[in-house]
Amino acid sequence: MPSTFNRSDRISAELRRLVGTLVHEVVRDHALPSVSVSDVEASRELDTATVYVTALVAEQGPPAVKLLNEMAKDFRRELSRIMKIRRVPELRFKYDDSVDKGERIEQLLREAQKPTD
Image (cartoon, rainbow, N blue to C red; front, side, top):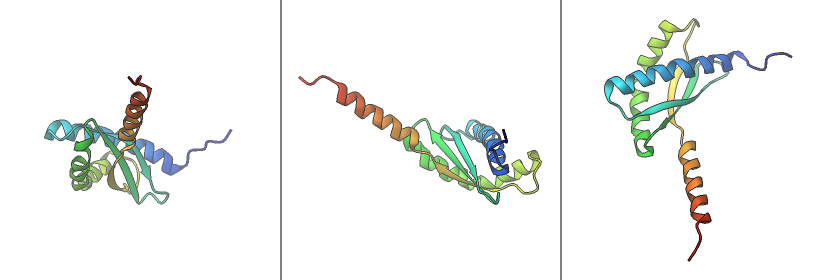
């Protein structure tokens, strides 16, 4: 059976692993809000990669994303030293609110199941 992963999928997976490590180090070293990389989607042409991050505290997510976008060039420079590809995609960080939405849905379902007096 032929592989269904194309080159951009493989690079996205590698970027998710490497950027996740870099973000973890930056969060720890610079006392930034605690965020983690949830996914990376590289464009088909591999010129840009969208890095989705989640935060432990939802209110800290957008400010952390702003800081990460300011550091994107530094991350890209570091990735160019690590990765064995000709050109590392430009990184764009975005906040992934799917976890927040899931928690909100769970909360609403729990409230709906409470017995009414």
